[in-house]
Length: 271
Length: 254
Ligand SMILES: Nc1ncnc2c1ncn2[C@@H]1O[C@H](COP(=O)(O)OP(=O)(O)OP(=O)(O)O)[C@@H](O)[C@H]1O
Ligand SMILES: [Mg+2]
Image (cartoon, rainbow over all chains, first blue to last red; front, side):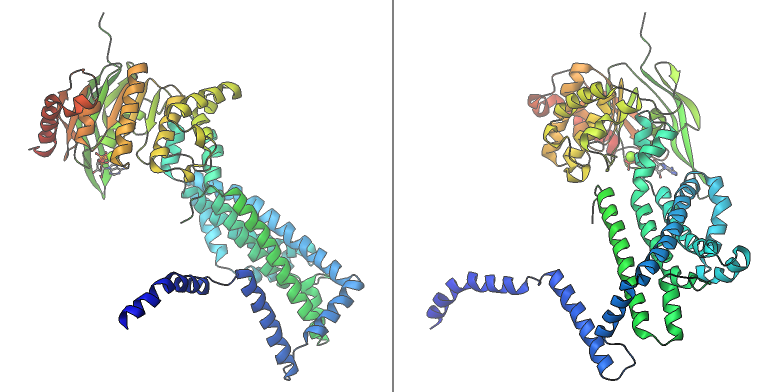
């Protein structure tokens, strides 16, 4: 009996292992992602049918089509993107040199750091009232608030990047004859690139997150303004269209930066 | 006319502030190293080997005393003193080739010549197939060889090496030792080679400098006769005797 058992088992073993292996292999990530999204939308649909005060997916799609066909959505997207990108580009363009200054020169750090740390504790949205009073209700205060959010997020991480540059690498450059300027260009900048890119991603997130509130300031168009206006008329589908658009655009921009990060910092050893 | 020493360490002391207290890392160290000499430095951990090397490299300044190279006081690092760091210190964002070219580019050497010189030293350390690979794709021994090629490329007259083979397996280590001696016998640079390994110290050196800790100082120096460094030497009684001598100097410091 036992002999037969062994005999019957032995050839079956690799086979069984193979099956177990197949079972253990995780299903494709994309598949799971898709399944999860489909499930989420189904849940939303179910809830709206069950009497919650939610628009159904088809209502939202209809609203999106309407907003697209009369050009409203495109106009809003353009207006919002312009604000976010202007604020973000200005913010990071200032944050990177300032972060480098702080990391490289102790004096600059001592002078700048208290301000950065202080303003970091204030949510950018809390600056809005001040910005309106000082800068009026045109584009400037909106862009300023977004700029500030992006700047603060990015400056800290650039500074960290410079401070964390491996001292041995700087010494290695020095013994090969490099002076400060070249060390900065050829060692400090590449070594801190990963930090800067993380800072840019965080900065973009903050900029995007500040957008809607910034557009509460007497805007004529923009995704945040559109949702505000829709709120007055209980126009839930339009609010949904606005939210989904913001989410999708934010995700796309983040992916873009992530892609840049992969390309630029592929030399890093991943743990 | 007697030629003056390549490197002169004259009564050098180095103290570090450690929590408000002075810590003596080097205590009145003096040594002369002749041109084309191969000196190895052994000693217990913390006896100031790296500190001494950093002073010679110009990365740190002595608290008192003077370090001279070619009769001139050391002021900052310079490309005539090549340094090979224990942690390889390759630029991780540059390929092997670009790493090797770094010093040449700094010196303003033109693209074509840079390429040729890099090619030569990459071949010398046997990394031709990995010339365009990033450091993350290299094994420890390959990284070390790349660091050696990078230091050689600027053609320094002095090589300062801080436990360069410390992290390598025995086989790779022996291969690199032999390679190092081979190139040294061709170009005869002055080499200061720090190591933990008594065998390595004896095998490579013209002279072994044994250091002691607390305070960091030179305990004794032991001359190694100029015989061919090969397997026969490794197996010889002479070698065994020198090893014992260095070993007891390192381990029975009173
Ligand atoms: N920057 C520094 N600040 C304070 N103390 C230091 C500094 N650098 C070295 N030391 C101290 O000086 C002593 C000698 O250090 P060093 O690195 O030269 O030793 P070492 O002989 O190279 O040791 P190991 O064999 O472990 O590498 C150590 O006790 C260390 O703590
Ligand atoms: Mg050391």
